[in-house]
Length: 296
Image (cartoon, rainbow, N blue to C red; front, side, top):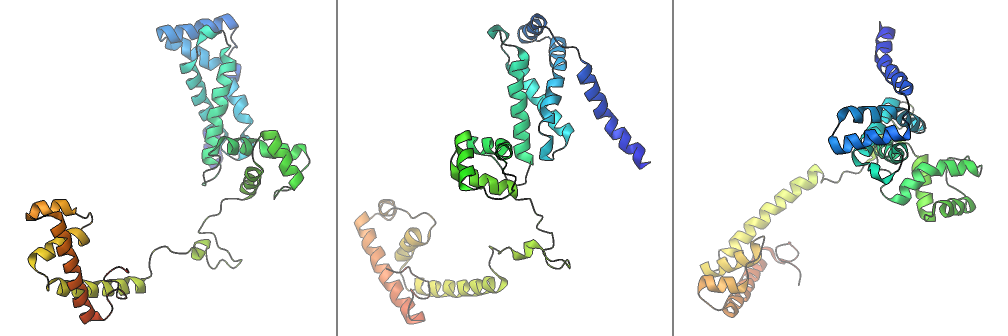
């Protein structure tokens, strides 16, 4: 049963490949006429004939990227997307063969898919990195550098010059291609005890730190509330708006609100801060050490 199910899942792909390879090729004039009919009249039948004739181009291009370990049908699907993009953008009046124009779009679509899915870590975000990703192995084989690790200085310089990229980019990509994705749940010992994720440092505070922070925060709030009670209503308003609010209110706006000049607001604020510091010093000793006021 399992074998029969597997055959049923594979047969549609084989049928598609066989149909694509059997599609007749187009002569230059026929290709041009179909492209004009699609662009100027929106003739979907012309589009179908045009793209079907070059499905074999998609398959041939996808086959060049099979060694990246991605499913071949997915590579073909991405190539078909590139083929459709080429059909949408093709300009027959330029007298260029559609197959020549479509090749670039097909290759670009497949390459983007490979870069997105070869690893869970994003690879090839710059033009230099993309060039290295798709050409580094070929160039290393060309100079008989079959190691999977770092390149020698001479080989690194050769690749950098051949691809017109920096030597640092070459070294980084060589290391990236030599590495493999590793599951955080994979055991790091032969007996299966412990996982790689156990070695990751946690960014969040420990339970002890959280409890201590909450306890200290409650104390500071209590001390600050008692100190604020020693101020007048106007002083409390100015301190809250100037020092405790997320966005401090300007002296000018507070002056308009209280009916006094902004210089008077500044004076009251200065006096209130002095009274707060005195009250906090009497309560906790050093308010700066307690984190109640910033260090001067």
